[in-house]
Length: 431
Image 1 (tube, one colour):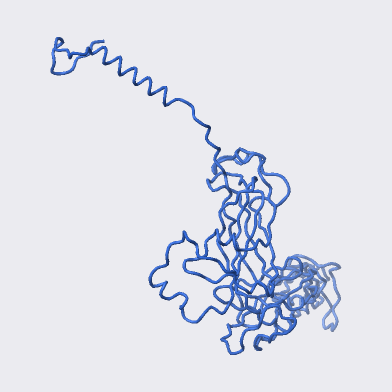
Image 2 (tube, rainbow, N blue to C red):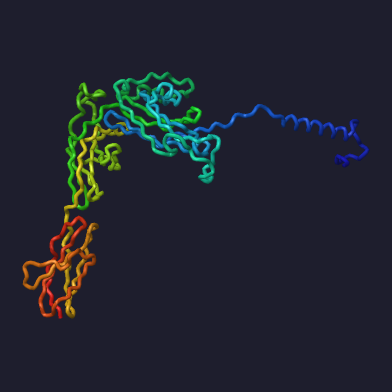
């Protein structure tokens, strides 16, 4: 292959021949390729860590804090299953600072209050992307909760937890803004309510910590006194609970008080109420979507024959956190259907050859079993049943002798055997 530079003739060669220049360039290029392709030390595998536990929530009931969160099911790079073998929760009593407490200091100066084991992958490096089929990798196994399950941990508050932990300033933290520096710690009155902060994280199969969850904070003030008791009644449509309204101030400190009482002169938050279905005492179910202002609640979940228990707690909201009192004693009853259906309406008798046809409006009760038809000869005071069992349809054909006046009435019956009062009477004669 000839090489020609534009603008020069073939005879205009440089002192060094072009073939020798090309060979030198090729040799240098080959050397670079060989040098770049030389293997170095193997790179360490990418470490997969679980995402932070989601939906961390804290509910304080009396002197117990109930924490819940979702177990991680994916890694921080979006792959699954999560490289997680355990989730843990840390807590610290520390004042709010400017800048905020760092994650490193929360773990260093906080206290581990508990954790739960999680089913882990056999090989953390064998993962699938979020849009891959579910059977792309083996599911996690071993003891513990399923990934993505709801985990629960409890902490009992003690007087020692009232003392804030002295956390030194983080040297790597950015300096607070000038206006924040001017206000802290002179941000109004000094902090008088101790705060306890919680955070959770997942631990990999090799013990490496994943990133921390969002934080939740619980005020360490005495809970409100519980309502004195709840009573409830019911009918066919709803259960109605009532209890005395709270009005007394927080109790003074006693030997039985775990946390010290607030000053009676201090402003007191508004008392509200929360209702629980405590039929299963180990797993009470909150029925109120938001705290109630009035001491009453209506539950429309009527299931005849079911045992039902209710408890009520008083609640105060401080700094966005809700503090619940101890619950009232469970008020339990069995829902018995003692309520008869309504009497049938618009009973009508139609005469025909050798028979009388009866029709009426159907009843609307959900537990209706049927109707019983009664008959007598005019002017009978007492009517006798002519249907040995309840009939389902709101109509009946009665074959009778012509020329005799008969009196009819209908009663409704529900599945519990409750019988309604009689319908209005009708009189008719067959042709």
